[in-house]
Amino acid sequence: EAKSAGRDSFKVYEQTRPERSVNKLTLLEEMRTGIENGEFFLEYQPQYNLVSGRIVGAEALVRWQHPALGRMMPGEFITLAEESGLIVPLGRWVTREACRQNKEWQESGLMPITVGVNVSARQFRDDGLISDVRDALEETGLAATYLELELTESLLIKNADQAVGLMDDFRRLGVKLAIDDFGTGYSSLAALKSFPLTRLKIDRSFISDLDFDESDRCIAKAIISLGRELGLCVVAEGVETAKQQAFLASCRCEVVQGYHFGRPMAARKFGKLLAMTLTPLDAHFG
Ligand code: C2E
Ligand code: MG
Ligand code: MG
Ligand code: MG
Image 1 (cartoon, rainbow, N blue to C red):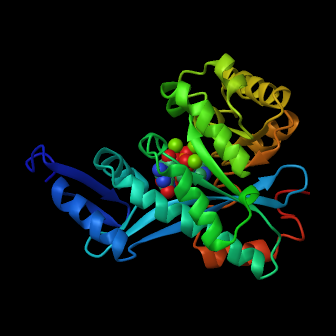
Image 2 (spheres, protein in one colour; image 1 turned 60 degrees about the horizontal axis):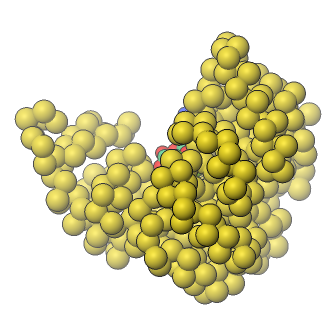
């Protein structure tokens, strides 16, 4: 029982098994060995160009196949990984694996796409991040332009002084940079201008109520035009309905991602989807 297990316990939940709690320290130790034993894997969620209907990217999302607890989602272990610092070796693995997989798709003749990797504040503060990314690119042979790092607004604002310098280093390396969950943190619009970004991802909290919330429609529309004026590619996350898609198209949003188009999926399945993308997804894009 979660309550009686006390403050050392960590709540674990998943649809396919009853909620249970595990000891935080145990889970931490298991995470450490799990990284070494290859228990983590990535799923890829497609991103579509709203005009052409073609896949232009994939967001890599980490999952943990825990030997006893089953499949765990980031919400169940990322915070613990961040607090403990394990996010650094885990993130290093995620980056390398996403690059390797993307290179493999390119080698098999599929249309080149960008793969997005999430970077948390703890990783961003780590001195080794840039060399980890450089190593991942060199070792896998992926061209830097096909890798995008997703940074959150709060991460950038909190580390504003160092952030611009580090981001410049990444841009020089040729890596793309996105601001994730845009609109949820302190949106210093002035700061947005000084960050060398390539993409802006509108948080799904603004997208989910588009169909019935007039103020969310105004906000989404404003963010899209702001992004466009700043020369950024704007991505809407969490698109779940055709109505939301139509609204975003009317605002000339460039890229969409969400359950309406495809859930995060295994690499093999994503490869098959990509193989069919020479013909646009007719069901959604007439
Ligand atoms: P995020 O970067 O904002 O990723 C998008 C999340 O929204 C994913 O959840 C995705 O499955 C979910 N999503 C996508 N489309 C829809 C939709 O239409 N409706 C709804 N309701 N949800 C949608 P997921 O995979 O559980 O990841 C949650 C968060 O965990 C991510 O949010 C990201 O912040 C973090 N995360 C995931 N993988 C990594 C990683 O490799 N490293 C780090 N540092 N963080 C990660
Ligand atoms: Mg993300
Ligand atoms: Mg997001
Ligand atoms: Mg997020």
